[in-house]
Image 1 (tube, rainbow, N blue to C red):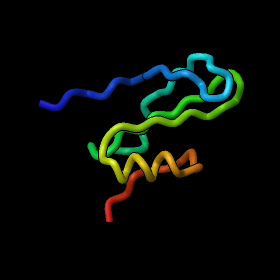
Image 2: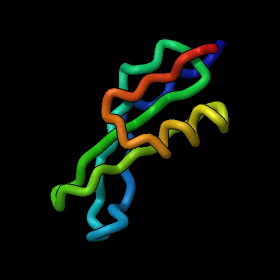
Image 3: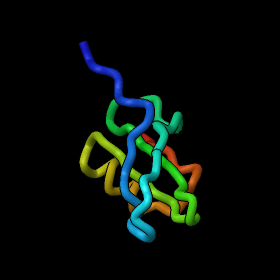
Image 4: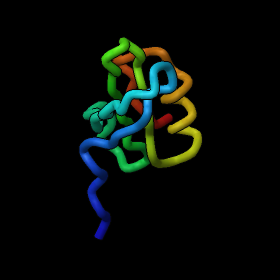
Length: 72
């Protein structure tokens, strides 16, 4: 049985070092990637993802807030 990914994670902002909560995004219905997104009080957007390496890299490299993982 697969474990469910956490709904929120906390990271330190790269810009101001404050803790930032990132929330699990609903953009992906597949198990290849669990993308997270959060915005720090200083305005810095923080992305994180777990899952398949190429899908995670594509998500982190994207500046699109409506990003979703597609199967080809």
